[in-house]
Length: 264
Image 1 (cartoon, rainbow, N blue to C red):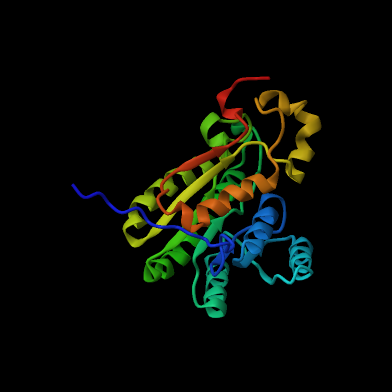
Image 2 (cartoon, rainbow, N blue to C red):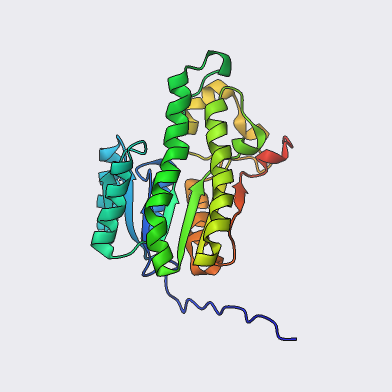
């Protein structure tokens, strides 16, 4: 009986994302900052978005320019379909294709459910889920035409374990997990893979702001530390690369064992 021939992947010393065009939403700080830099250094032509952090976005552009690497930053509101479509259109206009979409942008508006305002609920759902929908909708036709593409969505470990005071955020990430699986099933025959990653606690500005309120959070993590943003970015680079062509519909946890509920 003949078996299917395995695809031959040989980078021959090339960078993992060489020749690829990537859109990264929410790339101005934290994990997004790390993704933009790592994608660019791995050879991708990167267009990334920011909302209010223009100064941070321009710093990334200038830092990479000092390494003779060019990236493009564009303002974008995830709740505005025209704003999202403009980013996609400008990317296609400049590069004539889009190979990778990383839906990284999102917001947190914490509060106990019983006192949560309807606008607070809608703001998180419409931004996190709506932005993922709009960007995925914007690129999918182009990827189908190319018969190849990668969509990587940002979830969170709280979508698996829950979190007090974050009902809106947890719900948004759970919806992103479900959307990831649905799109993976729908797009697989078109050569497009769709996956999500679910980080735990990552050493970003956001974590620094809650450390004092939550005590020693590392006691909840079997590995005993927060993730470095570069570790998360490295996983996304792999999922975006040709090497990950047989992985789709997965929500991959990167949390140092936090979701195991095994304290140190």
